[in-house]
Figure 1 (tube, rainbow, N blue to C red):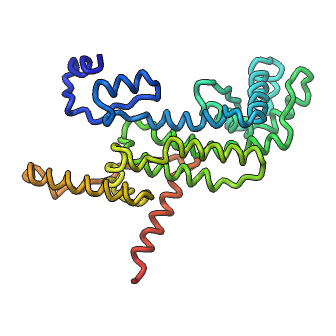
Figure 2: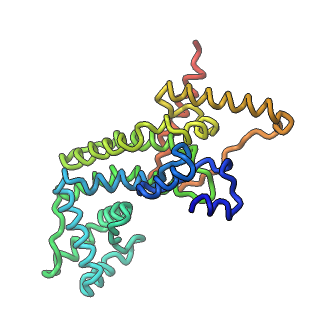
Figure 3: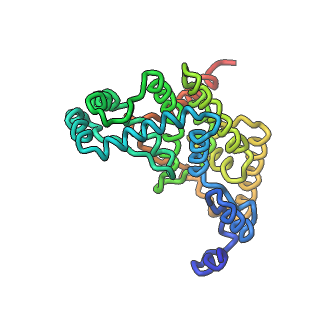
Length: 302
């Protein structure tokens, strides 16, 4: 089926370098049978989704589910209660973000957005609930603290998901840097509650399960090294890096021997502009610091 579709579109099999799917076993098996294991890659955004979803739904943290269910119940009540929604509308009329967000089970980031907006409007929500006897119970101070720390832990994953979902630029070279920055940003979140500490622990386990071997995969190391923004900055596995550099050297030598006349030395590669919203959290703040530190080390006299 897949090979027939490629043939219909005039796509030669030797020109297909990578086929991206989610983790469904039938999808993976289909690609492997059609093109071979080396040409299959799991969708990075889907892996990020699983990392967050498996953490949030972990059976090791039943208390977290209780808190999230309470928030979901409050949001649902405020959206369906005429009295409650009118009261909240009056309380938030001078705010830029006025509407609560309902989580969707199939999208983990909707849970993140629900938490983020709930925390932003919690004072107004608390006032509305306090004057309505039919309203669900408001979160207590400890639960709000847990929710705040949960949001901080999930924020790097939301940022990574947003950054990697671009349709107008190639994202393969950013995967390794993003994976490393993701772990770095999760690790540095300061935690005060026991439940949030458990969330952090499980998140890092999920990160290791899905991304610890990222430097050894076939698709991502070479684009990363060739990207002038990253080069070798985010590599930690020296053996994997050496193998990547060897592959690049071999490919360049082969290209030079076969088509030297087509090589244009007058047009160096330029990195595309990547506009970011300064009002939002960004994983790349840490990348900028790493670049600055790298420059300082290079300028330091021997």
